[in-house]
Length: 411
Figure 1 (tube, rainbow, N blue to C red):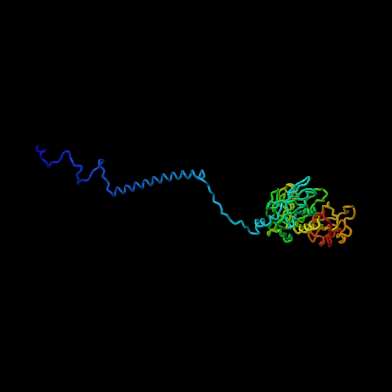
Figure 2: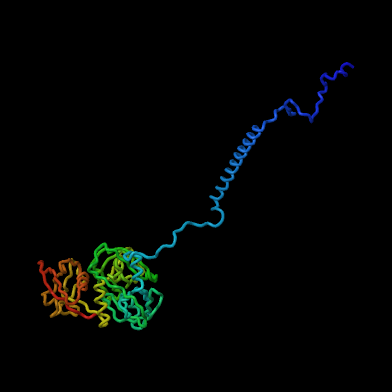
């Protein structure tokens, strides 16, 4: 009773008013202290940092996988590659592109059809009257009743007729009618050419019209002979040629060899083939091995003018018959003429200079000749009326004679 009546004694059940303010620190059921406001803020920041780290690790892993996929599969969506923008098409006048741009309008492709043969060649415009220069072996298949079609760089075509041709020089002139706006190709001077000069060749190799190749002048005054398919030598051409490494192939015949200013300095005519080892007109099927030959334009100009003006070309002659079977060094005068008479034409340049049967001509104007073919080539490189200085061997002695070349009609 005393205990029940003692209002100041402790409550053994530890009763308390949950709504009353407590002077003591509040307690958690797990016995941990409740964090203060600053502690809660620091804890939130640490949680955010940790979350960011997890996100970064996950993103890095996903990025690696995605990058590997893109690398292996070429990316996502349309691929666009970097490319240069539009630029000027102008080129320096003396560049290959500049030369070709000026010259191509004056170069043509010839398609020749005859009764038994057909072929493709090249030519170039000489004047605004429609005259076109090409090789004789290009137009030869047309014969007297064949057709020659000329195709210009623009794609326009026209029929052509033969004005004149010469087998000895392997040159021919054809003419187109009813064609306006022709672009004549300017002519250079082949005497000005030097070994190593850059050159450009234009033609239709294997009928690929307007093909442009470039190279240099490899040599000058190369004595070459081409043709000879007739067997009697009537179709052999003798050329004191310009040699070039500009690629020339079948179909380039008759096309221009141009200097650095775009002027024609030669007419592409023959190549040395690798299989046969001989020099031949490029109308065959042999390919270029870098040994091409062009008729010098100075010779081409003279012959073209004669063909246009008279229909035939003249040949300079010494007036002697050569022993073409002679195997020694030099060109030997035959013992007899082709008709069985004298090998030295009476009253001709050779006779007036005192040349005799059996004489061996070893030099022309101080330059050695090693065969009868070389003597013909050196003679054909001149005009009728030119003076030649010849070196002879007679009875073991050397002598010199001077003569003025005569003239004979073309083939």
